[in-house]
Amino acid sequence: MAEKTVKLEDPANNRMGSAKMLPLILTMALPAMFSMLIQALYNIVDSYFVAQVSQNALTAVSLAFPIQNLLVAFGVGTGVGVSSLISRRLGERDQEAADNAATHGIILSAITYVVFAVFGAIVARPFTALYTQDAEVLSMGTTYITIVTVASFGFFFAAVIEKMLQATGNMVMPMIIQLVGAVANIIFDPILIFNFNMGVAGAAYATVGGQILSMIVGLCILFFGNHAIALEFKGFRFHGKTMKDIYVVGLPSIVMNAIGTLMTMAMNGILAGFSAVAVNVFGVYFKLQSFVFMPVFGLTQGLMPIMGYNYGARNKKRVTGAVKIGCVEVPSSSASVFAVKPSMPFARTTRTAASTISSFVNLFFGAIACTLSA
Image 1 (cartoon, rainbow, N blue to C red):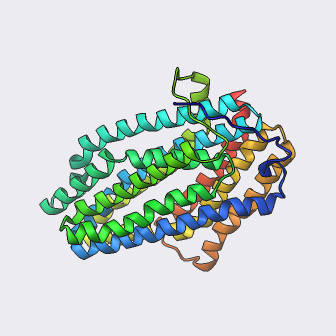
Image 2 (tube, rainbow, N blue to C red):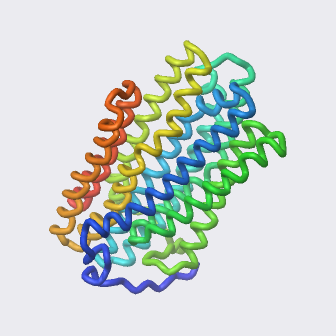
Image 3 (cartoon, rainbow, N blue to C red):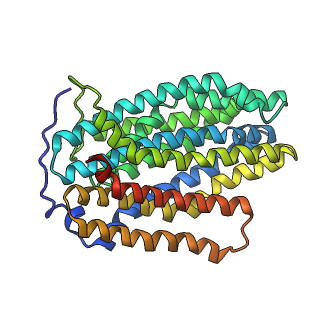
C-alpha cells in the first residue's frame, strides 16, 4: 500500500494543544455522546423486534449478552490502547511511530477477531446450556452467539478505526462510522427477522451487517480521508515496545469492561432459576443503561486523546488541566444518576459504580502511560 504523506502540526497550532480546555473537551465529547445515543436506541429497537418473535427469542438474545459484552471489551479496550499511543506519538511529532501504532492496531484487531471467531464457534452451545435446557432457547442462543462471534470482524476493525481517528482529535468521523452501523442495523432488523422469516438468526445477521458497513465506511475514511495517520503494511513487524505501550492502557480497559460480563453471567444464572421473564427484564435493562452512562463514556472518549497528545508534547499543564476537569465532570455526571434515583436496585448500583471506576481507570492509565513506557 502506498504511503500517505502527512504534514504534522505544531502542538501550539493543533487544537488539542492550544484550545481552551473545557470547550475543547465538550466539543470532543458531544459527538461521542450522540453516537452512543443512536447506539442505545438501536439496542432498544433490536430488543423490540426480537421480542416480537417470541419470549424465548428474547431470552436467547439476553443470555448471549455476556459473550457480546466480552467481545466489545476486547475490541474497544485494544482500540483505547492504540488511540492513547497514537495521540502521544502525534504530540511528540513522531509521525513514523504514530503510523506504526495504527498499523499494529489493525493487525491486533485481526488477531483478536480470529480468537473470538474460534472461541464463539466452540463455546456457543455449552455456554447457552449453562442457563437453559429448553431446546428452542438453546438452539436460538447457540445460533445467535455463533453468528455474532464468527462474523465479528466488522466490529473489531470498526472499533479500532474509530479510536485511531479519535486519537487525531477527529470525533465527527467516528460518530459517522457508528451512525452508519446503527442505522443499518435498525433497517436490517425487521427485514431479516420478519420479511425473510429468519427470527433470531436475522437479528444476529442484522447486527453483523451493520458492523460490516461501519467497517467499510471506516476503511474508506482511513485510506482516502484527510487525517494525521497512515497505514503501512509493507515490511511490517511486531515491536514488543509498541505492544507494551498499547496494552499498558488497553489491558486495564479490557479488564474493567469484562467485569460486567462476569456480573451479567452471575445474574443470569440466578435469575434463570426463577423464570425466563426475569432474565428478559434484566437483559432489557442492560440495553437501556447506555442512556445513563453516555455522559461518563463520552467525557472519557473526549479526554483521552487530549491527555495523550499533550503528554506527548510534554505539556504538563494541559495534561493536569484535562485530568482535573475529568475528575470533576465524570463523578458529577455519575452522581446525578443517584440524585435522580437514589433507590436503585443493588445490581444497577453495582453496574453504575463499575462503569464509573472503568472511566477513572482509563483516565488514570492514560495519564501515566508515557511514564511506564519510557
